[in-house]
Image (cartoon, rainbow, N blue to C red; front, side, top):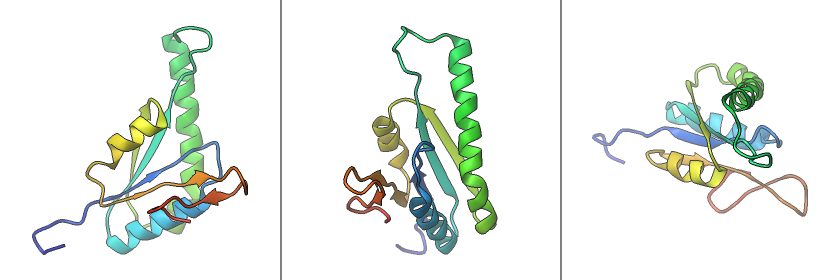
Length: 128
């Protein structure tokens, strides 16, 4: 990195349905050290089990995910008050949203639940 190259933000992928304290702690700490914003990437989608969802159902799900994300981030905002958070929610499949969101990030932090341990497991290049 040179003086002419700006430090790019840290992006973190969150799943409000699984524990991700280790991932969030790593991401907030990295953003604090780099003095960059933290881009919180969260994908949500409406299941198509009953056909195409209506506007009302889509709105209810989006509102619920916003509430879950707010509750998930609240303790981390208190622990790292100097970190600016930029929420980046998208309707869509997590893998597609994550690939798109990774563009432009200086660091992408993501975790994966291990089927063997039931705990957060680190993928290559991710936090544990």
